[in-house]
Length: 276
Image (cartoon, rainbow, N blue to C red; front, side):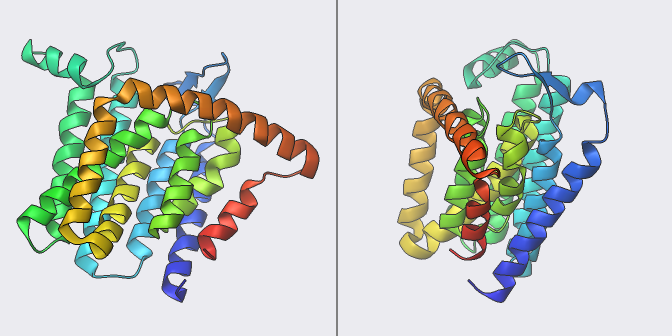
């Protein structure tokens, strides 16, 4: 890995860890939730992940325009997710159909704002990154689709974070370090990503995947990614069900790792990000 990429990894990790350390001193009730086990956790990992991923994207090598577009996508997706976390906290409706149905009835839900906001930001970022409009639209679909996919798998401790770290390492995404440094708190059930962090990290991952897919497979590679992500969205309940089972496995592994080694095994994952 080049020196510039290594620096971007470090920046993402430091910003993510620093923002979380500052926010975790707060006790704002709007950012508290009850998790699957009935424990009270914070949503502070969300803003920390978004700002860390944005910082890593900004510090990564590459054209200024492409990096700016990536930062735009991450911040917009994270901002739309934060709006849903705060405004839509009590809304039981889930999924595209529910929010689109409400929209047809004249109600603009926070989920609809998130859906169209992230989609528009993804396409705009794609058009800024790519030279041809068709490639820009495909990249936009990948960005928005990956943001939605990470949110789909964020149904239990550790799954979304682990997915971003592993896929991000494969795609050369420096911002994945922001997810890695938050893994202990997430899997330890002290915090959660929420819609803020899941969508922000997902958008950053989408940018990296689209660029990697474009370099390796050109337009065909981007189109294949887009089709796969649309298929995942169409089978969202099945994807989330698989993620729930994976979360249970991750928690058991983490407990055994902490008992056997006295420290969080994600140290190895952080090293993988810096030296893949």
